[in-house]
Amino acid sequence: MGQAGCKGLCLSLFDYKTEKYVIAKNKKVGLLYRLLQASILAYLVVWVFLVKKGYQDIDTSLQSAVITKVKGVAFTNTSDLGERIWDVADYVIPAQGENVFFVVTNLIVTPNQRQNVCAENEGIPDGMCSKDSDCHPGEAVAAGNGVKTGRCLLKENSARGTCEIFAWCPVETSPRPVEPVLKEAEDFTIFIKNHIRFPKFNFSKSNVMDVKDRSFLKSCHFGPKNHYCPIFRLGSVIRWAGSDFQDIALEGGVIGINIEWNCDLDKAASECHPHYSFSRLDNKLSNSASSGYNFRFARYYRDAAGVEFRTLMKAYGIRFDVMVNGKGAFFCDLVLIYLIKKREFYRDRKYEEVRSVLLSGRRPSAALWSAPLALRLYPDVNIDGRGTLADRALSECSACLRCCPERSGAASECTGEFGAAADNGDVARAVGYQQCR
Image (cartoon, rainbow, N blue to C red; front, side, top):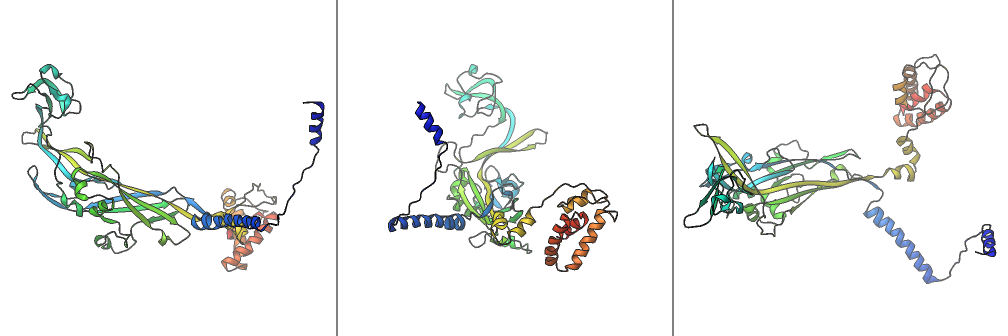
């Protein structure tokens, strides 16, 4: 950069710049400009404030508790179990009534299993063999039922067989079920009790109608016009989730029950309603080997000789997941303390200024006091030799209320007296008046 360039740069530091405005007398440009302004204003008013309610404070930290109960009785008559009555203690797992529960709809039963040696199931690849050396003693069968003993049990007229295992024998060999055992489960009922709370606004509510008549819940059922009776027919829940009960009851599945609480807390609490939706969560279109939902459990017994045996049950059924979410919206404090006419009144109530002050026998310097804090920290401090702070504050508060018998009058009158007393350094009177406020 040359000498002239440096000189020009230095001189430009002392330049003064100002904006120049040009007014275009063009109706089209002016109309377009006003339309743009109107569009922005309409967006703010209609979308931000009316539709999205941007003036509200939002609480998404919903706290929720879910309690569930299933009721219903079914009768079955099978070759494995004979005649049997099924009640809620038999077909609901777990029994505690949590937000995730399972209802048994089908069973494969392997009765009278005892710990012994027997042939492994033919459907287990790691259990297949052609000679004893294929079955290593003490080795567990991968994805099988027991531990190999070292013998290969060949079938008649066959060069292949299965390893002998030490296990609960006989092992489960039943094929997939062809029809559900608990067909009556379609008419079982599910009671879902949900308590929610928005901690930011200290608002709580339940999805059960608050009535004193206990017989209400014994006769009502959930429906489009009865959202505060959360008793659902099991078959209806499956249908609302887009599935057929008999299909899902055969091999099981997973159903989601979603409870949505979107509450405008500027309105009455009675306007905050739960909204329910239902969906099938597992892959209902899949016909793979892993489709459906099942698990195994056993019931144990002892015979007359004290030998333990069990009945193994492979349970198919419907798992229900109850999910709760939502948000609460409330009138924002910013509107109260900055935009309306009485904003100073609300701002004084919301914010309280506290300054430290040294209390002694002499008159203290002027300060704004927090009455509860002062009375808690210095109740016995002597003020000007005329009594303790607690006694003097009580006396001043009583005097203020006698002058202003109505609460609203007392509040406004004592507000002015409080400021004057604080400015004059009269701590006892300031604390007493603030207590009256």
